[in-house]
Length: 477
Image 1: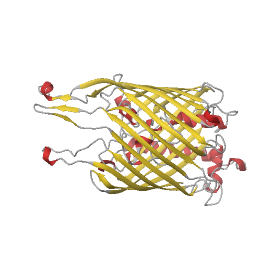
Image 2: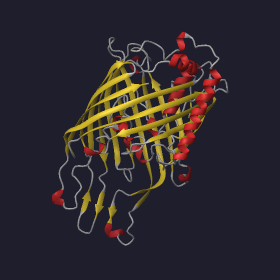
Image 3: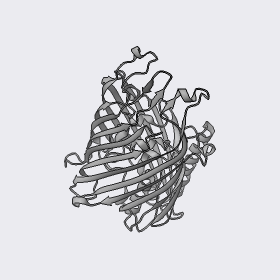
Image 4: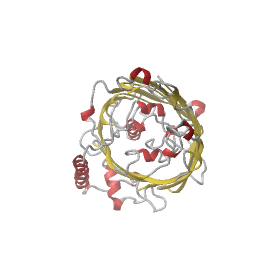
């Protein structure tokens, strides 16, 4: 699973091929303590002070390089160019991107319980380009502050797949503010770069119509299974420590990207991860993404493979065998292979990111210990398909999980806990302005959990197909 930062660097290279050779990388690190968080915040403030001081005497950027300027209802962000300072810093390689995503969502039929919830998540992302800063070419530093509040309906549907991906971060079920990303990456040539740090795995498995900016459910689909291939999450925690190599095989940095990496197979938002590094708890992965031009329209093909040597709890437990040790059976290692594609079928201007297309994901794993043996998702999406609504977008998707049906064998009976899961989602992003998106969303899911858990079988209740409706509001500051 390749991290999103390689894609960001490819975009930078494509835009400024003559002036720099770089690889932009998001590295998400959870602070292990309040002291560490304060240190990171202080470091970011110091960097901001140094860069703003260094650029204070420079001239304003050219009109063609002022992405944050414009009328209130037409500019790209709500707060604009900060009196010219924001554009000036961007021209010198320092950008601040701030966004806020709020979701109100409810289970209106079926599921475990009819319930409405509200929650939100905010991001502040700082990116620094050493080439533009006049230091050295090809270096990129990225830091992120992330916080969430409220709750989602993920636990009320009886499904494995989260219906509100945004509410999973930084920590599931907790109101938390953290610094999940802090990394540095360096390109050594136009074709080769290195990175290291605590990495954001949600930004891997990129797809034009079913992933969004960071794969966190804030711009396209809300369901996690339509943002990423969920069988990969077994081997990768949200922010593992890791390092890797990025290869650009062609002169055009957007044509193809190859990523090879090694990650820690353990990690959490509450730790920096260094104390958990272990040679027996590693994940190895490789991913390649290539642009295609089928039917004369833009498309992409992606293929990846991932393996972990960590010891996992077995899906199948037999108390008659292990009752003496009172230990659950273990399985060493797990693997997964995955593929995805996106393809425009209507594209008014090639490479513009406007039009309508199709997408698909497929994956297979060992099925033990990974409960998801196979995975598939398919759908259609688009943006700017109507001239009068250039910033609107939509998506309709379906996913299916083949579950390996974990079993628990006791003295009298063998219990099967999960069944196959499938679901669909449809959304429409109304661009109130370029910096405000209002999204009605509906999901219908037949979850893997078909019965409530109860000690007495007579107390178990059937969990019916869940219908989830909601709204999302994203603001770009």
